[in-house]
Image 1: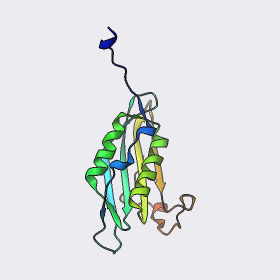
Image 2 (image 1 turned 120 degrees about the horizontal axis):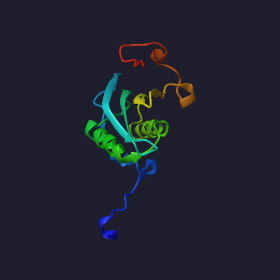
Image 3 (image 1 turned 60 degrees about the vertical axis):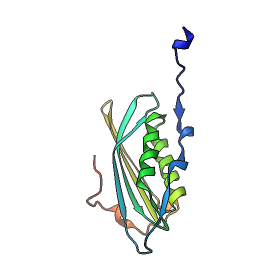
Amino acid sequence: MADLVRKRTIKTFWDIDATILRAIPNPTNEAYEIKIKIPEFTFLGVKEQPDFAVLYLTFYPGKKVIELKSLKRYVYQLRDIVVSYERLVNIFYNDLMKVYEPERLRLVLVCNPRGGISSKLTIDSDWKVRGGNERFNDWKVKDEWSVTM
């Protein structure tokens, strides 16, 4: 009977594998912006219930750009990870900063309502509290990519 019952292994934020992320050389030294939307961002909340969100990335490349296939694989692994969204957005940010070393990275995670409450989390490498110089003041005003709730 014991053979019929499989012991489920719970994966936590410690199991997130940043080595999945790959970089490709930036083809230019000119300034430009890359915007990425991940509309089906899923992970397991701390009660092991699925959480759904939309993740928006604003990326000003340095010498490297994001290989989208590896980003997709990185995101897919999160579907089986039990983690709070507050921790997850910070891990995601730290992994992208470490691998790609961008001029700027802004993440906006808009979580679908759960129990009648929705939330929006934002991290921007340009903020002084994140070590930035606040050169890009666009985060202070709304633009077409601003996400409202």
